[in-house]
Length: 407
Ligand SMILES: Cc1cc2nc3c(=O)[nH]c(=O)nc-3n(C[C@H](O)[C@H](O)[C@H](O)COP(=O)(O)OP(=O)(O)OC[C@H]3O[C@@H](n4cnc5c(N)ncnc54)[C@H](O)[C@@H]3O)c2cc1C
Ligand SMILES: NC(=O)c1ccc[n+]([C@@H]2O[C@H](COP(=O)([O-])OP(=O)(O)OC[C@H]3O[C@@H](n4cnc5c(N)ncnc54)[C@H](OP(=O)(O)O)[C@@H]3O)[C@@H](O)[C@H]2O)c1
Image (cartoon, rainbow, N blue to C red; front, side):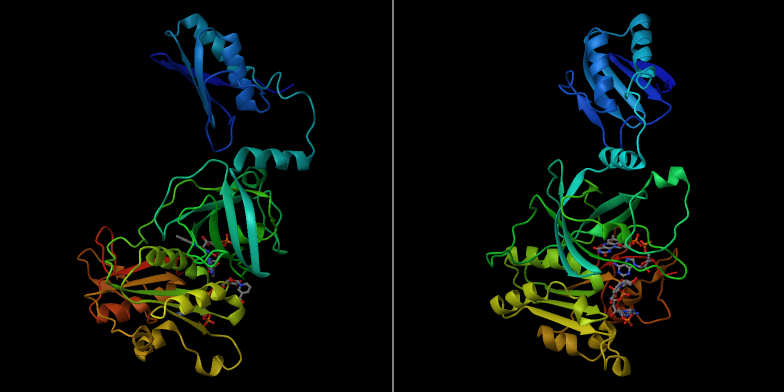
């Protein structure tokens, strides 16, 4: 038999609010406008009891530790006390007295917390995936370049041997991280992909444990397979979008590693819009095997002769003696040569994504003065050429998405 829940009840008009001392659902709310047909989980069981045992209840919403019940008439003290009793005793008779195995407990946590299914994994190599996720409920359309959250519970196994230390409450929480939405650019039939399909694509590298930090999420994602459940945020957010880019502007995408993700989504969008200006994408990776979208770009390059896709490796044999970074490609004039147009701030937008050292974001003081990092990044080079960096609400023509913060 479970323990009584402690409940505080208040009313607002015809709605009674019951605040409980523990969570009854996962992160998502459960709404009922009638008794659920097959009440198999705690919120559904509670709703069923409120509908069946309390007269006049016509709507129930359960989210985390809040239960709201609406009636067709106002709540009197007696009915409120009865309903409070129903909430208090939920776990006294539910679930049936069955001891859960640890596996069943983890499965329960998954059922309560996840809201999406992994529906496709293209493992480009063992540490680099293009992964697609299908949410349980359809999502609203969002702009190319935005990001959302992916999460898995700390109870999930890891793909590496790193030893994390945490207590039981932490084990039942979720490791959440931001991910840019990526996009294939060409579909299976060789056509430009449609925007906002039901599946959302992500481009993810597995981060290896370092001496100072143990990555929480990616080693857990990399144990998963098609059909497994995951949490995906329903809000797609960020200012890293094509807002303000005119049809004839030149667009320069510069990225490191999986920073290519939003650039691909925006590239697909520009082609769908029949963008007139030049488009160039330059990606830096350690090894050539860290490029998962080259076949797609090859098709684009054939189809759109003015499009440019350039890649640089930094750790292949031969690279070390003469390491070239994006900054060098700008300084040498090669970027402009490849694009076939100057880096002119009056008609060019530059998008920087990935490693914060490549981006080289300045610190702004109260007067708006900028202090650039010691190691030269692209922001400083562009600032010196008259470009304006997005800052707070002021939209410039240099846009950035840092995947982590420099320490
Ligand atoms: C807005 C936004 C969008 C993002 N989009 C993506 C994306 O599309 N794909 C993606 O792989 N990551 C993306 N990231 C990074 C992502 O949020 C995670 O940090 C990353 O997946 C590692 O998670 P983790 O828990 O395993 O390790 P964490 O504890 O988050 O990171 C540990 C360390 O790994 C390094 N690191 C983190 N992310 C990367 C990366 N992508 N490439 C190389 N080194 C990294 C950093 O040194 C970091 O301090 C994005 C981050 C932000 C803020
Ligand atoms: N790439 C792999 O082979 C590989 C395999 C398994 C796991 N991982 C994991 O993935 C994570 C990182 O992977 P990643 O290679 O995608 O990301 P990354 O470390 O950000 O490197 C991406 C590219 O950015 C370059 N770069 C670094 N500093 C720069 C700067 N100041 N200016 C311009 N360019 C700069 C890197 O060159 P440098 O070569 O100089 O760093 C590299 O070519 C690591 O945690 C690792 O554990 C990577």
